[in-house]
Length: 167
Image (tube, rainbow, N blue to C red; front, side, top):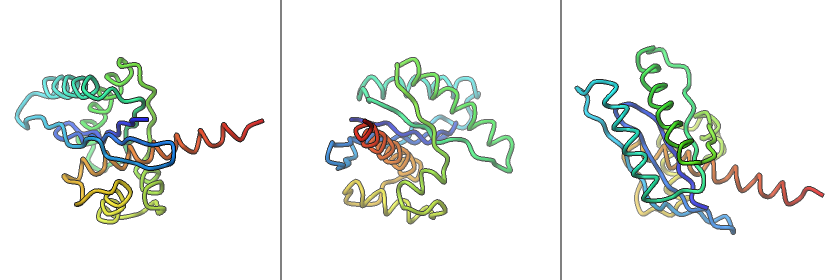
């Protein structure tokens, strides 16, 4: 199963694609960021985000997707901007016919490190280890997106396991 993880943002959206094998092995297929120019009007930035995600979906054809949930932020402007980016991402994923899961930062940290308050460095090292990467995934937004994909892949694996145990 190929899972797409997204770490939303208007300026920088991280993406990570993880292949989950039946035996539980996880492999990074692609990861990076979608960037939009800072001085561009918001509507145009959101359109760029939408179009670039569509191109990514067409290139990889993931089986499922997950997006990091917006958590409370003290900066209302940043929270609104991230919320708008999330909306665009969710729309593109829904239009592609993908089932979409959403996870909080603490749920992602718990799934990847076993500790819901893990720091960024610990998260990056665990993502590197779980995916067998030669170096820490960079930039941070891409590493976060890989963590979202890992969280979702593990969640799907657990759901499959539970379904098989049902009489």
